[in-house]
Image (cartoon, rainbow, N blue to C red; front, side, top):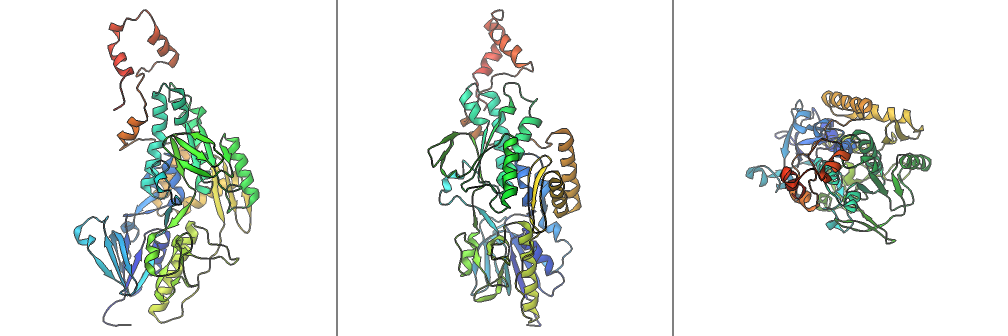
Length: 474
């Protein structure tokens, strides 16, 4: 080691793996640069609650600089990595950054940790994304939240019964944990929180369809727990369809392989993932999902100074099964990568990655969840309590824990959601839906219909009503 210069470490990604690696190197005699294309760390397990207006974005996201404010050997760069050169040991930051100086920056490294994660994949049908957004980032969650809330507003304002039915139909493609959690929360909000707020529609008629291409939902969970979950969902009114292969997604609805067409204006994609394209730049073999096939110590073959952690790395459990793409796997991988950088720094043997499986959890709805671990398999209220406790515990700081706890308590006792706000809506999508403003009165629907058709009221006494009845919502 050169005594005249502190070794440089670059960490790409500020998610669970990247932060775990950074914290593991706290106090080491190195200069660390953490690069991320956003300025915040996101608690992805609760992202679906932002998408359904149960939590605010600030409840599950914390600025990376704030998290690492007391770690003196690290700096944070907001930027988009566009090139990794393993031979020259350089990382380039390109478009997507906030300044020209950073956009043209090239960073040198002695050790590199790549923890860029992955995004949803449409399996070659990327044109589906504009109709069926996935759920991996805050922007994704806010987009889904906007569509979710606007669907009810548009249904309230349209006179076409078929259009109204399509607006009140929500199709979720993919029955993994995220799909199941979304399918469970939408009926609760529609039937409880919104039920008394609309005058022309009955939100209890909201239809939720969960499509799964495999033979059962929650394929990574115990089969008996998955079966109980399906029973719970169906008891909540969710239509669960397995062996349902999607062949087309359009603005009008979803087409299945058997020819079934489901008219809907609300589609959420959760059927597949693909690793970050940064993995291709490392010159290492990749699996069919784009994950890097790393050595046992998470290093890249031929480049012992490069480590890949989190969802971007193909790792195995003791039984040979893939490590699940969950927070605990990413954090454990980040810790291992950070330790191995320390071992190399002091010329010690690196250690292999050994995943400790703490089990999987999924929440279905109010008082319903499942817990699947090697020690216990649990379903129902106590699993739901365990889910609440663990997710509160793993939130990044006290403010977030307190805020989420208060929001959940409020929702539990009142059945309300505190952040059902539509902000920054897309006017084109709203206009293209064909919704029409039909009434602004606060009277009950029956009285409004009677007043609208009453012969005692002349056209001259209600010019504004005539104007509104034929106006678009622009």
